[in-house]
Image 1 (spheres, rainbow, N blue to C red):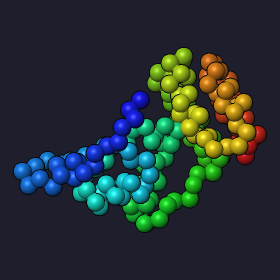
Image 2 (cartoon, rainbow, N blue to C red):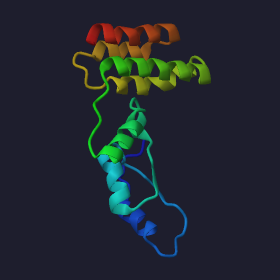
Image 3 (cartoon, rainbow, N blue to C red):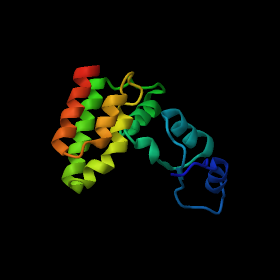
Length: 148
């Protein structure tokens, strides 16, 4: 996985070059609504791309839109909302990619959905080692039952 930092100064220079007449999309290190706003305000980009920050947080786009529209952070999702979204995300992954690939690719997302929950290690280990889709869905339900 990439570990460097995006050169937003260079992106800003490209955007502000008078010879450039195409939309400039900034990419790199956008992991919060505040950084998204900075990309637009400070560097003048026409759009942004978000990659790794979406792992377990597909709602980052909603957070950014809310921040840009209202100038404040939106209320964090409840554990119930995260559980419901994780189940939908997982189900769609299985529908699109099938098992076991859909299960394997969702693991990094699932552990990120629930990052920061105290005493979550045992559940996290189950999420990353369970191969059967139905069993994973049961584990996701158990997260709300145990930690909600």
